[in-house]
Picture 1 (cartoon, rainbow, N blue to C red):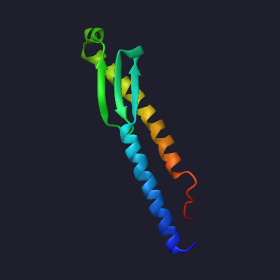
Picture 2 (picture 1 turned 120 degrees about the vertical axis):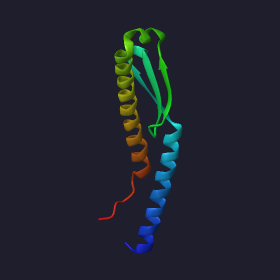
Picture 3 (picture 1 turned 60 degrees about the horizontal axis):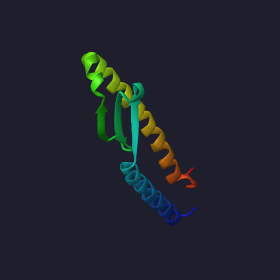
Picture 4 (picture 1 turned 60 degrees about the vertical axis):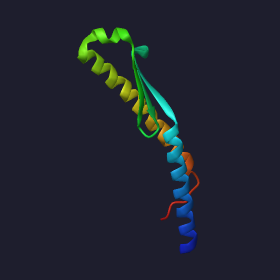
Length: 99
């Protein structure tokens, strides 16, 4: 493979990855703890878009609220990780990697 073709492939891959990153920034996942007691809305770039906490959760005290927020965050992050893997995999699919 000549250097010009390799540079063209690298440029095409960079364009696809940039487009995928822009797509991820506009996509959202929801992390849910305890059947909706806490819901975290996160973009595909891990940006926090919102938190909803049911009113009755506040009676659990700080430690209880913290635990639910942590659980909802972990759920959202796992979903975002899966989303990123899928979107970036689609962006790079079929691109030959140099040996």
